Image (tube, rainbow, N blue to C red; front, side):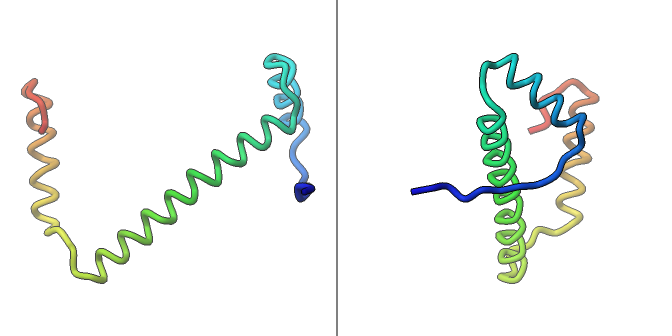
Length: 87
């Protein structure tokens, strides 16, 4: 099965950097572009899913009091200053 073709424009400097990377790793442009795109899509998908989970938790009423959150971080910072573990 043939793979779909994507086409887009990029700055010349980025193409030069990609070519240098390709030369240094003995891999072609396509290898690096596919790898970069896969990593980007994975990271962005994780972020979108994490946001959706947070919204679902909030809508379900699974919230934490802001004062409790602040107290935790203040305590963690204090422990770091004092040289203790912040846990």
